[in-house]
Structure formats: C-alpha cells, structure tokens
Image (cartoon, rainbow, N blue to C red):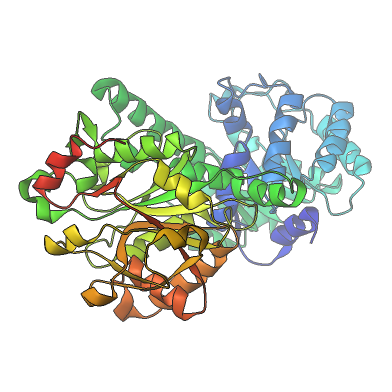
Length: 544
C-alpha cells in the first residue's frame, strides 16, 4: 500500500488512530518499531534537534532533508507539521511537490502568519492568517498534488488566539470547502473542553485531528466517544531524550567515568541495528563477492575458575594477573600476533570485571546453570552468518589457556573444515592426576604422521590409558564451510534441556558421529592450561 493511501486510511478508518512524533531517521524508526501506524514530523522537535527556535528558523529545505531521512528509514506514512506552508500559496504548492517526491503522505498547515511562533508561546497574542488567503493556499496545494491520496490537514488556531468556538467553526468550514482533507483543532487548555465543543458542533463533516499535549490527563475513551479520527502524540520522544541526555551528561561530568552509565543506556549494537548495519553486511555478500572477512576467534571465558579460590572471588580466572596484565590480554595479544584481530569473548561470572579493551564481548548470563556450548551459541549468534560464506576461518578456544602463536599457524595449514590440536606429550599430565580431555586418534603420533592425515575418533575424560593418543589442547578451527555445520549441531544438542551443560568435547564427538572428519595436528607443549596456583606460577615464565 502506498504511504499516502495508508495515511488516508488512518483518517477514515472509523476508529481513533494514533501517530507519534519523530524528528530524524533514528527516532522515526523507533516510532515505527513501537507499533505506530504513522509518524508526525513535528516542526517543534525538528527545529529543536537543530538547536534553534520553532519560529521558522530552520529553512524548509532543511526540513525536507530531515524528512527524506525519516522516510527512507521507515515504511509507515509521515505527516509533516508544515507550519504555515513556508510562505505564500506559491511556496506551498512547491512544498507539496517536494513532499510527494520524498514519499511523505500528508502535510498539516496552520492558519497563522509567516514566520510562525509556537502556539504555546503567548498564543493569545498571535495574529491569525486572513481566512481567504489561507483558503487559497489550501486550494493551491490540492491543485498541485499529483497523488490523489496525498492529504492536506488544515490546523485551526482560533482557540489558541482566543477567538472562540464560533470563529473556529467558521474557519474550519472555509478550509474544508477549499479542499482540506481533515481539520486539526488545537487548544492550549489543560482540559479538552474546547476541542470537545468543536467536535460536537462539527459532527462528522470531515475527519478531526487533535493534539492533547496540554490536556494529557484526559482519558483516551473521551476522545473515542467524541468521534475524533486521529490523535497526535506531538513532542514526547524529543522531550524524553532531552531528560535522558541531561541526566547522563551530568552524571558523566560528575563521576568522570562510565561505570554507572553503561548498563543504563542502549548498547552500541542497538545503534548498529537501528542503522541497518546487518543489511549492509548482507549486501556486501551479494555485491562484493571477492571481499574477505577477517578470520576471527571465539574465546570461551564465562566460568569463574573456582579452583583458584579467593583469587577469583572478585574477578573470573580470565582476568587473573600474569606478569602485570590479565590472562585474557596475553591471549588476545597472541591471537593478534597471528593476524587474528576479531576476538569475540563470552563473559559470564563477574562479567563487568572482564574489560580488556579492543575485544568484542558477548554475555552468557546463565553461565552458572549452563555449559560451554551455550556460551559458544551466544558467540555464533552474535557473529550471525558473517563467517559462513566468504572464505574465512574461526578458531574456538578457552580463556584459561596460554599458547604460542605457532599453535595457530598449525591450525591454519590443513584445508579441512574442522581441525584440532592434540598434545602428544600427555603422560606427565596423566601421571599428575590432572583433569583433561583425552584424545583417541586414527594414528598415534610418530614420524609417519607428518605425511599422514590423522583424524580424531573421540574426546573424553574417561578414556582408558591404553587408548589415549594425546590431550586435546582446547583449540578447534572451523572453516567457512564448517560454520553452518557447527551451528546446526549446536542447535540439535541444545534443543534438549538436559544437555544445556554440555561442553566442547560433546560437540566435537557429535560432529564425528555425524560423519564429519576432524583433522588432528599433533604437537608437544607450547601451551599451558591454567587450573591451579602452581599453573599461575608457571605462567610467569611462559614464553608466548
């Protein structure tokens, strides 16, 4: 349906309809997402967002530019608060052409003198336009429109100027006769008496629009019973944003940090969503087939690390200090040295303490009752499909493992969809009684494995020693082709509520059971799984 037709439907639906103010593309999108069927392009709030007065201090071309962004951002109709039409009948009919070109559905003009002053600023002293001149302006506008459904709403300011009901009715009748599609009857009283008296006398000669900014305490049922067609919530988004911005600016200035602010404002991801960032990503896939997305890594770091006792009371293991900086910072630096810059970290326990700069954070707020796979799903949902079709790899690893960058080089070499690293020097870990994910492989480590493709058969902590070929190091590389496979496997596993605590080995074993080949790269050492205080001491001498 055309926007003009949709707006005409709001005026003539036979029910009380509502539209809400917006003053730029972002606020217009918010109005539409809230469920409103239409938008009011308020003259007050459009001028206010420029920081100027509602006295025609914005040019009509500036208003048109703002409307173009609003129209492009939304699919519901917009009615412009066109003040007095920005000049004579000639200016107004040119305005009609420009509004139609930008997909604007309607315009409301008020019968005052150009340049106008806001109705709530000494309204009773403001002169009204000559009734015949204003009739001519409406007629010129109707003759100029190319779309039969485009609507012109005549705003009657007689009550504002103190001229009473009789003058309001006389002017409304004249404007309706000139072709106005609806009458907006305005009042500055704190009660709806004037608009109700007008509607009673006017009856149903054409739709009547009201703006209950001043008589806001009136129950909506009163407007419904009176038979009004359209209610405009005229300026409340801008006013709400002013309050929020003043409070936030004052708090930041006073506290000189963002600690008490960040959780009370929209996240940057929400800004990106409203801007349509995801659509651009999809468009890049269609129109930039040669563009590559940089490889990324997912770091699972939602657990506390309670085995470290009091060291993790106020921060998770991933933020434990090692040589003057957090464990996570060491991990991130190693990834960066290997050319992997996009790092998605899944936080959980004491998530606000995980604040290494430059990383992309996702939160698993159910970390106490769920396992690693739920954290991984959060990360993959965050990445969307961006790593599923443009020739890029993803590495999944743990947030408590230090490693040499050459481990990542080993993972890069094979062309298989799934690759893991297995430490063949596993006996000392076994003898020390450490918990580990032991690996059963197609071939044991030997000189022959340099020329043999070794595949993983199973991971587990319950494998008999005679069957162990090594210790899984906690790294899984997933190719672009493997990305949707792993997402499907995750969805299958987590669809069962009893499997919400499953870990990475459960996923890898499922991939194997489903017929996927998991390539094994053997190595010896050059990594450190930090589980104990002794491991922390060893980490102080670890060479990354």
